[in-house]
Length: 233
Picture 1 (cartoon, rainbow, N blue to C red):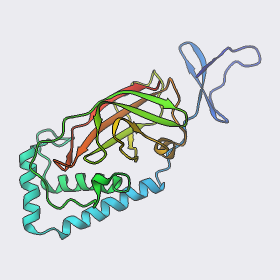
Picture 2 (picture 1 turned 90 degrees about the horizontal axis):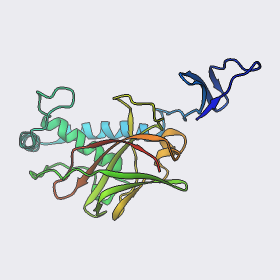
Picture 3 (picture 1 turned 120 degrees about the vertical axis):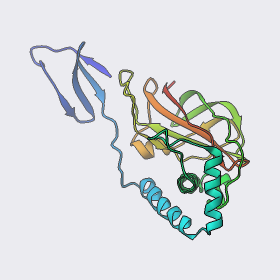
Picture 4 (picture 1 turned 90 degrees about the vertical axis):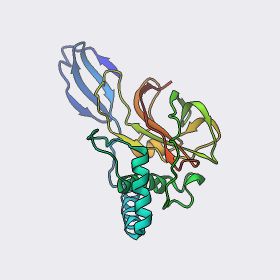
């Protein structure tokens, strides 16, 4: 972001010029780079919609006994709904939620092969995982985790927002699933997933809204999400 000093030749510029956006601020006129636009019709978006449709169809093919097990599992977890904390997530919602995540990440992580989970496991959820730092390393983005993970038993579920400035403090920022392979250790490499979604790689000094969870095969479910706003280093 750059601050523009106005003169007799330039008194006011508001709007987009080339790849830059000019806007007013309390300190004067500023210029920032324009973020790449999100294409909702990308292969990733289409793949998610296809996956959701497939998982819905798989629910219809479950037996009554299998559906009953999912309902028992929902009672066991007693997980409140996101938009209405007084209501519990039911068995059908759990089946769709878990298997849609599994479908979306099935070609990236062995933990989701085969992708369809027909029978839930009554076991405690994994402990939440947190991000310590996010580092731009050349053309890739490295997510540093607060504990080591195993690519045999674990899978990282990471959502990131578009690039943000330090002044963008909105309580709600849209995030998108980063489809990448989980490796052993404490670093999750986003690879080309970020520019594939947002049109460009995030730069050092910019901010991002993150939402991360960890899936574990011992419970065949994922932890609660840890939500953080982090500056890229």
